[in-house]
Length: 101
View (spheres, rainbow, N blue to C red):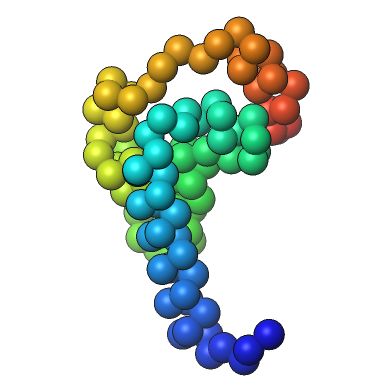
């Protein structure tokens, strides 16, 4: 593995995160429940992790603000445009695979 400076690592991680957000923005057909069932995280998880990182550095960020960063628009607007009702099968799979608190 190449030796990276902390600055390079941060730069590359940020670029990868931006690319992930762009990809998810292009794939609004992929529902959060699909992501949760397949990967164990979704757009809401990403927004929570983003908010946690901001707050850990002393920058307050609301849930709505972090979701707008991840969704590229206000969450309610995204839901209205893109969210569909999950099938019974997807809901059942989510109940089996959902993160346990």
